Length: 185
Image (cartoon, rainbow, N blue to C red; front, top):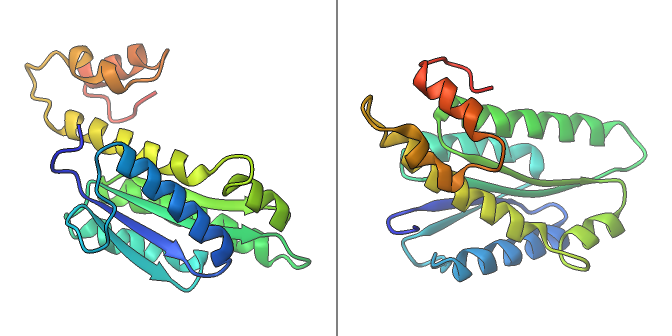
């Protein structure tokens, strides 16, 4: 159910041949699932940043506005001959995860980290387009978080959460919610 859901997509301009293809896959998925990806519409906002390293800061700030149900982060970090790749990819992944943890808003990590340009191209459209996958994750997490936020103490949680739960995860999630344990196992 996408009624009322709002998304932001943060896209790194560096390696824009790749990020542009990821964005197209993302938009296609959103559109096919009832979300109007038009930049002039009311369902998706777009923010372009210089590169992948800048994505977490902007994603966190967008999440803090309370305006979005999920943030999709798209970037491409391709290994070169210096350790720069290791630093950037590690910090971006940590930063994107922290943005979600700190705000309670799903922040989807859609940053390709590949050894070669060819690998990046394969993941952005030649063999498949992971932009589609990142949008699906955002749709699922936005819907799931809407359900989780609607839980009250007397709501039977398994009936609310089962439609979004992957096979095999419901028993541990059910136990965590029922016992008010802060960690989901």
